Image 1 (cartoon, rainbow, N blue to C red):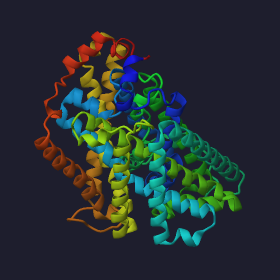
Image 2: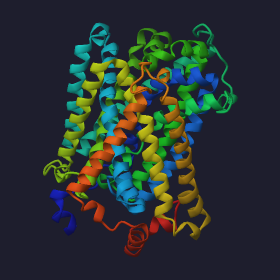
Image 3: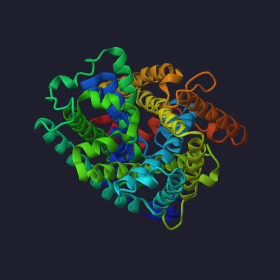
Image 4: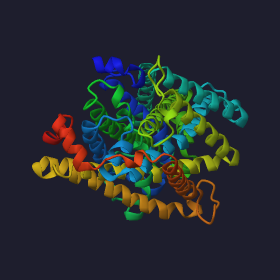
Length: 507
């Protein structure tokens, strides 16, 4: 207690949220309604009725990497998550790039999420004219980002309360939509080409063949991304050694159930032809389905997508800002980003920086074209696969001296995370080849001879290398830390901080 009170001004607020709050934030960060709206059409266009199987297959690497987050968090409760863990396991250069990837995924997606929240909110209110007004959308989007950033700064407890309301509204709306779609589809009141009878074979991810599966998995990974936000709040969560990791793992399972239920409902009601024909509408496919399924109650689904994007706008700010905080207090970024607000005990400077850069990126890319904004979202797959794979490898390296203690350690802390990393690295390589073709981009145009998503993804990574190298020249303290796995892990075990994760991997 004395140590905590002595460091009150420099630490995040301890025990600000509980396990259920962390679970909700993990779920909200993935934006289930928005994610499904964005990928259901393109995935069905690739694999037909086997879309549920693709969502099931995409879940496997996510669960394995969530396991890595769980065990690494048990040994090191640092809000920088991947940045801190990879640094300790694999060195400062790779760790810095892992932190950069987390922060930049937030920057790339926050503006798009807020944009969708505004558009679908206006559609739910039947203000279609305003929803089609570019100036109105951009102004409201910027204001929304500022508002959600303010909520993040005002306190983690407030953020959790807001998320509790938003996730309930989102999940209830999705369930209403799924039930009505199933009842109408099975009752013969489906769209033309719909009324399919659900089959267990739809869960077979290999039903449509290898090439289609690869493309579907690339989209499937996106819908699970974000669950680790619960772990970024580890320093602010009760039972910080285990609750955040468990929340991350539980959230992936709940997401799987939700996605399978909605996918089955949509296929039963609309069949494959409807979704294939409208696959180019991307997230607006739910705007079309809402009227067909719910009639005059279409605002329920529109509101679900809006609240999903609104919730994710806020929760995506959290991991990016906490990663910035962690990097700054380790001297990997300017020290000013490590400032903690004396009253609210949140990283206010890094939070506002994340919001400011996200707004600038949104305005820049949307000024180029709306398709360029979609291309920046597609580029996320590269960064997501990169830092998730790093985390899985770091888990096995971090605990490498403990893997032979038991079969459970070997499988759950070593083999599982490595398999998850291998799957993601395979998807990363496949996505690079896929995104190199301009025809696979939203704009259909080439930038520097390749697709815009690849240019954006590689460009962000190279920018990180430049920033890292420049900061290394200016302040080398982070690179001079002693961070080898053997020394630090043995010290943690001796101090009792890592024993639970090592001796009882199922705890």
